[in-house]
Length: 157
Image (tube, rainbow, N blue to C red; front, side, top):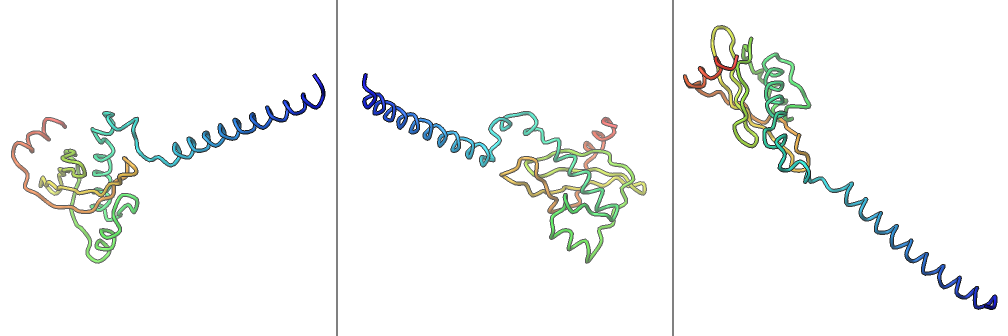
């Protein structure tokens, strides 16, 4: 084998190797990009953690209690509600939280006891499709408390 033919073969294989390495690096960069930018929780989508929404009940209780105590949490409450609370405060005496229940996708019911009264509130939340654990309180409505719900709260405490 002559030096010229060896050199020509070496250069040809080197170009092929560069092309293969370049394509492999490009594919790895593309895969990494898609992994980093993909916000879908395909691993958790059917998980019990997502379906039960334990963070929603926590956010419900914490946001309601912060409003009732007069110190609203900015991270848990929507900006419109915070502005409204500055204009007119929300006054509810809640000495004890009897129950917090998740009702639907972004709704929960909180039952509180204060000043000898038991009161029930439906709390609405805003959530994000990009982040499964993002909740901000958007609305509070007082509702009637059924006797069956009241008995349910006695059984849980």
